[in-house]
Amino acid sequence: GAVVSQHPSWVICKSGTSVKIECRSLDFQATTMFWYRQFPKQSLMLMATSNEGSKATYEQGVEKDKFLINHASLTLSTLTVTSAHPEDSSFYICSARDPGTGDYEQYFGPGTRLTVT
Amino acid sequence: GENVEQHPSTLSVQEGDSAVIKCTYSDSASNYFPWYKQELGKRPQLIIDIRSNVGEKKDQRIAVTLNKTAKHFSLHITETQPEDSAVYFCAASEGPRTGNQFYFGTGTSLTVIP
Image 1 (spheres, each protein chain N blue to C red):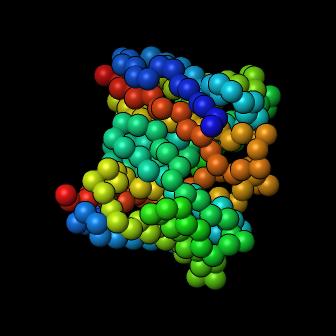
Image 2 (tube, helix red, strand yellow; image 1 turned 90 degrees about the vertical axis):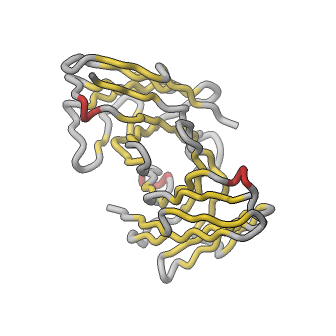
Image 3 (cartoon, helix red, strand yellow; image 1 turned 30 degrees about the horizontal axis):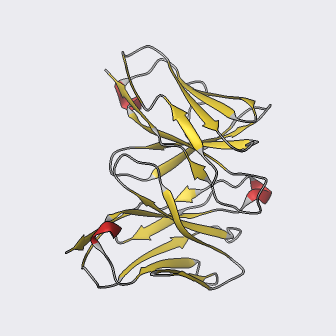
């Protein structure tokens, strides 16, 4: 099956700094990737849709200037949390669909745990 | 936008019994309904999915039913085993035609008691 990786798997940063998270599709080309946020014992909340070569589409209530998304190639999307604050601490997960199949399934990365101190 | 509700939030069953988790959705254009299992700190794993052109799908001990008219779908796990213990999420999507965004339910923490 299709494989999606994320890097780093966990990161600790100081309040006010920026953190970049990478999401890669390892064995397929993903024109679209998705970013989710998951607080402890809560659901996955869709933050944005990352489109290769164009601007990301953000869900209502998600600050696009705070969560910068870049999808520069067919296998890589990045999420940068700018000026991070403790309330940004969360589990960030990306996913991608393999358009080469007829499936609607999204393949999820292993997630990145961000802790802002 | 799509709103997906999921019940119950927690469920405990004896090993060997069945477990049922129910979801409702609001967007009548949704046509794809996956179910994911997530263990603590790990990525969600697809366990079964259904498209709107069928009413039921089964894979060994797991089945999903869909009622498009009522906008609800359910996950059925039979002969539960301790390794089925995890958090289960339903989701709804309009599919690739409109971007393939997934909107998740609130999750059900299933505990199977040996």
